[in-house]
Length: 157
Image 1 (cartoon, rainbow, N blue to C red):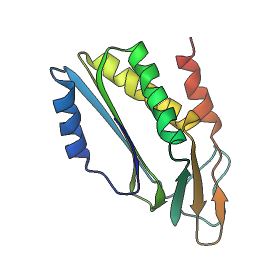
Image 2 (cartoon, rainbow, N blue to C red; image 1 turned 90 degrees about the horizontal axis):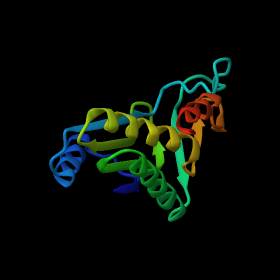
Image 3 (tube, rainbow, N blue to C red; image 1 turned 90 degrees about the vertical axis):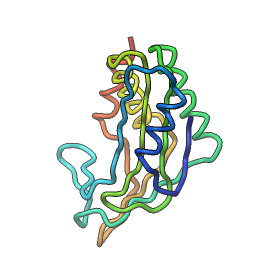
Image 4 (tube, rainbow, N blue to C red; image 1 turned 45 degrees about the vertical axis):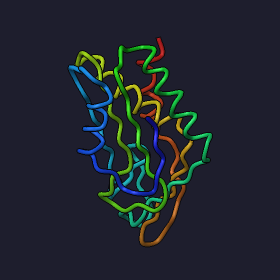
């Protein structure tokens, strides 16, 4: 299941929903991403003006959900998943806020872990979200990090 929403989410409730939907699963892996106080695009750069005040996320409704579903379908074709869940928030967020949740269920932990990593790596690089980060003195659109592109290489066999 894919959800793009402004509202926060309850990790325990989402875990329980996936556990119920997945049936007789042997492993559920969850990842929750949080808005960082400091964004560093690459090792030698930092946001001008210091710490993050807000992070604003935009998306293109319909296109975004379709792309996220495609990422899940790719994961399902690689690993024997019994279920997967992505929640990605949009709108104005603040440091410490939950921004994304990825959860995968499989009969075996190895498949659940790898599928969750795969989904996150593709979300970071291919999901159509636009992020604008503001500090006390500046506001800038965030570009993809080179490390996000590097993370994809291990899945491109």
